[in-house]
Amino acid sequence: MEKNMDLTALLAKIAPQGEVVQGNQFPELTVSAEQLFETAEKLKNCKEMPFDFLLDLTAVDFETKFTVVYHLESTKTHDVVVLRTDLPDRNHAEVETVSGLWPAAEFMEREVFDLFGIRFKNHHDLRRLFMEDDYGHPLRKDFKDDINLIEYPN
Image (cartoon, rainbow, N blue to C red; front, side, top):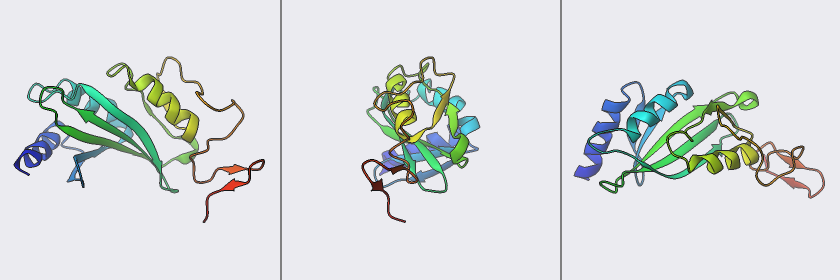
């Protein structure tokens, strides 16, 4: 537990404008979409504990907003933190790409774009991975598939 206390303090130091909480497994830092790239860059280049490995990048649809979630690991200490940003504008959800910081983000961002419709600004190859261009975004809670009759319950 002492280790996580140090991590939450480190996250608060890196992003004083963000919200830091101790999650069920890992410390979590939530920042605005405008602050996301700068915060991600600070986490990656942190001297005490560089979070230099992107474990995962995904999104969650809460019906009123999207949340983009990044799991970052320090290969130096093997600590993991969660970086999150909320996107309240579901019709124009976008956030800056982090693929320049972690090249693995390139395909993860394309997957999130394909399945949720979230755009990643300045991504050099943002196109669909799995679905046809005119198919909707099947992991959105407002998605309806008239052919296969897939609907999320209200």
